Image 1: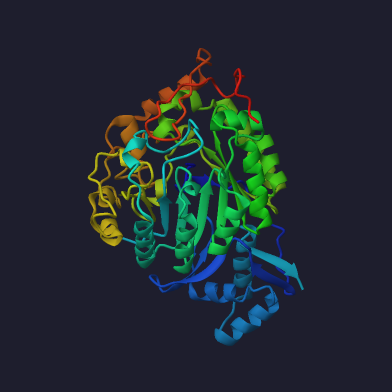
Image 2 (image 1 turned 120 degrees about the vertical axis):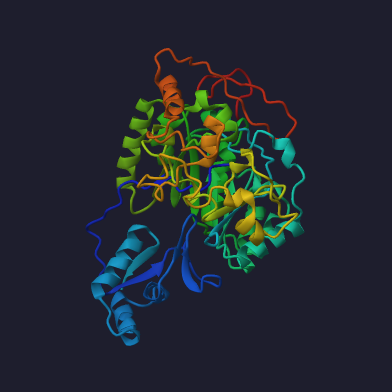
Length: 109
Length: 380
């Protein structure tokens, strides 16, 4: 067999300073990524071939809206209705991190 | 103790390939009594019940199990993310369509080099073209594709061409995995370990290509730990996040751990959940209490967890020692000497590679190095 994940991986330089997430972009999960609920942990999780991300409440709320239909601006509005404060910068940073890892894709509105 | 996130289901150790870097155990004959379909279905159910989210279907060659689609169907119904780790031999179009319908999420196909002659020599069987065809089927049926290449002395110089091939076949991810020295790779270490100059050249190519392709392809580079200052954080810590079930039902924290002198734990004799929580094979090195110095007082003890227990055992005969890869290990000279030999001007270029047998019981036969022409047996 081939080696399996042993926590030994390094990803080459991945900083992409120029990535901007415009309000009209429509994010969606990449094809190889699945958002699901973990019964044992009672949390939403993001699954990827080699990785599991256990999400906090707001992370899960953002990703549920990454359906290719909502724009980033609409996601902010939606979150604003659910949470008292929505730090827009943080939402954009969260999305940017996932885009850089190619777990979320953008199509322009 | 946390719940495990991933299950590595080693469905069989039978394999049509005979790669000399294989990490399967040397005593393949001890794993012939494979779990039945019903036993695997129960393992999957128990794994999901204890919090496992990902199921890696591996081997050997998992496609040799006729019940593979049935196992995928069950894992998918349980909500597991299913990942097939395959040589692609046996990945026919009808078989692929059945697996797609069963809900398989992701396919990882290994290839041994960027072109048929070298790839087939390393694999020990004509297979390159079938692998390329299988990669096309994966893409056509809409799966994400990971191309996996195990790197060693006989193919690492071809890394630019390997990456070009990954681009050509449309891989979403390419895993460039420097050989980890367990099982057959351990036996072939002297012939497989690359030189420092080879690694430096390869890493420069990986960096440049990673930058160029960053929007299209993930490049995962598994570090050559013999050349590292610190050991790898193996499995994210012993029995911390992953568990392995071998073809005969043994439960292990990692696929290399069957070599350690710890009592067996089998799904045929106990529940997975209890094994994970209580079996000595799981508890022996969990956490940090087992650590000797210099790990015990090291600020990195929860970064790399003392490195790899199996590597410590293979190199020193004691699984509880610091991984000798670490420059702080008292046994570091064991690694340093292997590295020195790989870089010596006087190194013997004719070191034989012992292929792993396809099936247990076949005596291994040394064959010439893959980068040296062989008479006859030309790949198709």
